[in-house]
Amino acid sequence: MWGTGILKGFVITMRNMLRGTITVQYPEQRLELPERARWTVTHRFNEDGTPKCTACLICVKECPDHVLRIDVSTKEEGGKHIDRYVYELGACMMCGLCVEACPFDAIEMSHEYELATRSHDDLTRVLLADVDAASLRRAKKEDADA
Amino acid sequence: MSTAAVVAVRIAAMIALLLANGVVLIYMLRKVLGHLHRRIGPNRVGPFGLLQTTADVVKLLTKEDLMPDSADKPLFWIAPFVVFVPSFLAYLPLAFGPTLAITRTDTGLLLGLALLSLIPIGVVMAGWASNSKWSLVGGMRAAGQQIAYEVPLLLSVLGPVMMAGSLDFSHIVEAQKNVWFVFPQFVAFVVYAIAAQADAQQTPFDMAEAESELIAGYANEYGGMRFGFLFLAEFSNMFIVSAIGTTLFFGGWYLPFLSGNAIALQFAPVIFMIKVYMGIFVMMWARGSLPRIRVDQLLSFAWKGLIPVSLAWVVISAVAVRLWPFFAGLVSR
Image 1 (tube, rainbow over the protein chains, first blue to last red):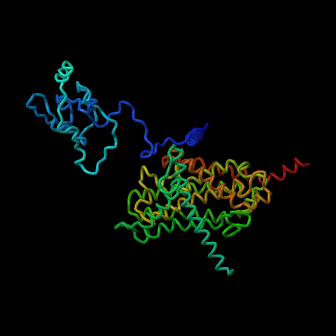
Image 2: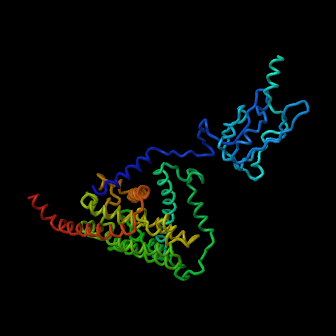
Image 3: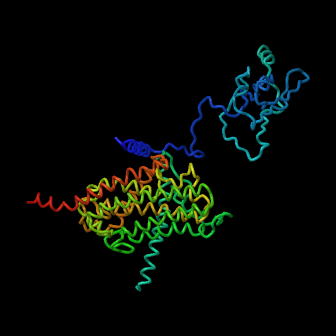
């Protein structure tokens, strides 16, 4: 019948009104992020606080946006030393390819999503500085010694 | 009290009602539309966002009074008042209770509707004087729409007027002591509801504003309190058409089954206002439910749909009102 569509529309909006609001009032209330949500890149650490990163540079090569940079030096007694692990957050598109490529599970996509900064410089993060890279050979040797 | 003092008090009451109504309706509109969309609406300024409108008013009052360079300056200056003043004056004949009305005339309904029909002139003036394409299209649409919908509005009013035998709001309400006119005059009520929605320029008939097409239509070039006047007039029109509808079809201050109750009559203005705001709620509900229709559909709907229906209904109810005593006599004999 003519006009029933309009009445149906009225019923739908009234039903919506009676169902209550679904707004999440963001700063006070937050939704839980899905497990696999991808935000900033962060490092994973061993129990003793040393990074799992071996400075293999695969993440750097894999990154399509060139947002990762690792300054590496070689120690006198052998092994790698990470001078700086720099993460250009402002250019990162959170694709997660670096995490997929990492053979040591040393980095992961965190759930940190409030990324606004007051200054552009704050978007360049130094994730690691002046720390020895993890070494599988050394770990094996230590295991054997023990 | 001297006559002048009484008049001054009444005008002050009118202004107070208009401003309070504007403030309440802006808040109510946001909340109602929000909840219809399952949002919360304003809730940051003050408890439950109650001070949001106050903040808006302060913003409007403190804004710079801009005038476009190429505007038609006298017309641009006067247009908001041409919109605002008739809408303000249309509060004059409303009857809020058996004894409470700003003024009482025998032709109150005619006066109210005549004042309302002046508003499109101001809207066209605003649209023309702004010297902007969007404003002009908005103003022209408003003219076409309001002239088209004035006709069914006036025709739909005739039914209740014939049944009540008066144009005085108080008499019309008293005639509905036993039966609200919405029942015998249902067709007239439907026509009135549609035409009133168009007359108050509410979605789905907000062709003059049409945010998504014309930005803000005729109010485009206005800012500050001039825009505030246009805005306020819109909300005051909503109140007026809802009040006229309440008076004509929903028994004004009478409650069902309690028509002669003295206690109920004590609260006549309160009952009347509650009914008016329920009417406004339905208008907002329509606003939140229906999409804006196209302007040619709008006009053909008025001229080819509403006007023939309301004309036919005028004839039917005229015959029925004339013949009613005869049939009633047959039954009682």
